[in-house]
Amino acid sequence: MNQHRIYLNAADAIVKGLRREEVTQVFCVPGESYLPVLNALYDEQEIQVISGRHEGGIAFMAEGYAKATKKPGIVMATRGVGASNLSIGVHTAYQDSTPMVVMLGQVSTKFRGREGFQEVDLESFFRPISKWAVEITDVHRIPEILAKAFRIAKTGRPGPVVISLPEDILYEEGEFTFQAPVSIPRPAPSIKEISMFQHFLQIAKKPLIIAGGGIRFSGAEDALLEFAEAFQIPVMTAFRRHDVFPNNHNLYLGHLGLGITSEIRESVNEADVIFAFGSRLSEVTTQDYSIITNDKRLVHIDISFETIGNVYPPDLGIVADIKEALLSIRPISIEEVKGSGDFVWKEWVDKRRTKQIESIKQLYQKQDIQSKIIAYLQQRLNNEYIITNDAGNFAGWLHTYFQFNHKNTYIGPTSGAMGYGVPSAIGAAIACPDKTIISLSGDGGFMMTAQELETAVRYKVGMLSLIFNNKMYGTIRMHQEIHYPKKVIATDLGNISFKSYIQSLGGKGYQVSSFLEFEHVFPIALEHAKHSPVVIEILTDREQISVNKKIKDFHN
Image (tube, rainbow, N blue to C red; front, top):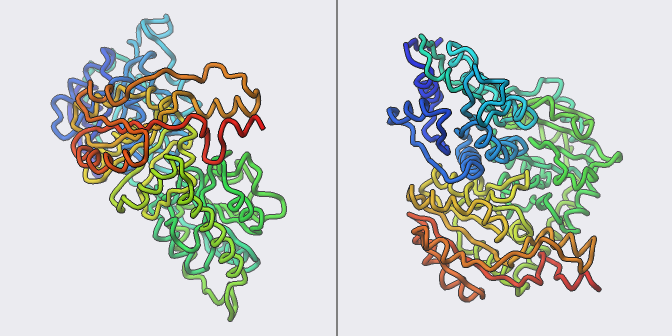
């Protein structure tokens, strides 16, 4: 066992523990309640501290960083006020299965329970939206708690862990023993489970794979591709997990997101055996828990036993790392499944793929600026990019039409959190400085965390932010028009020059109102975005409320 014993104060021990876990970046908003930890970080040359403008922003940065690196994002903030601000990032990490370790300053132990200054019971506050929430009460347990925090954040279904740091504890000293960094266990299916899996392959007439985020965190993209090709089983990706399977592959049948096409719905309806790989089968992915009906068989493989059967009782549930599962299943003889002829579902797969391609081709026939920009990005970007997006109807164009043909190229919030796009892109850019990082936002979501562009300017982080500005909360306006036609309230927004805003922060900014203008400035903006944040503000027609609807359509 690799152990390291040393005498330190608590704050130094925390930082030493972070280094033992190979942490290189910490995202924070500084606070007096954890100043000793910041002081210890000052003396640690191997950890870069990224200080942001708002706790919600830095939590999204850390979450985006974690998705890009597959390592836990580290966040620090102060007591109740900072903690509550960053809670949206913790919730996003929880729903998105993203590993994070959150360290929060807390009032001194002698003030606890007295409603001390900015006191919140952080364990109780975060317990429902984290994998583990704990307060350090014994300085000597710091190595143990840190090791457990990283183990919980990284293993099973990944997620956020929250550690409360009482201020007085941070000054205490002790002798600490540090263990080796946490290794991730990767369980595989049993021989019996593999045999049962083979049975469901044999009885299938129209099988369908739903591939979720577990594919990405397991690094199972290549294993999934090999499995799908070996058995010619078509694949759909779960909500905002587009990049786990190449979208241009002849077995890809679409993305189970918001506002799916009729072609995607038909494919799911016709399937008789569904193989859910590394997906929690969320509300959006399952279209309000409607797509897996009693006439279908469900084979569900996930790393978390709590996920299996949580939404749908499976005909076969396997608790396993999805990469290990796919590699274990691979030796199954193809002849045992299909006999001596072709797979019985080949004609069905070809038909459904043709329908999917036809729906994508519609993009190049559309004349709205959003469609033209998505088509342009598709043609312009190579495989060395990451696209992030905020929440809002503007994302419908990206989700419906953009083809993610390379793994690890997309980062989005399955929690649907507004304000996510820009800070997550900053986190991704810090993680992958050699990649082109592009965020897509609406004007509503952008303004929720726009201040973090100053953080990007200060740290010379290169990324490009595309803002689709229709001067309203477009998604909510759409629902208003559906449920309360012509009774518009609280959804109109003011006129802001985002070009001027980014320029005032020291970055580059452009404003366009036509595709020709966008086509002209994009290469210039992309060049500047290698070294600093750049904004392209895109003025859009507010009548074009979604991919297929105009506001007037709701009044007919």
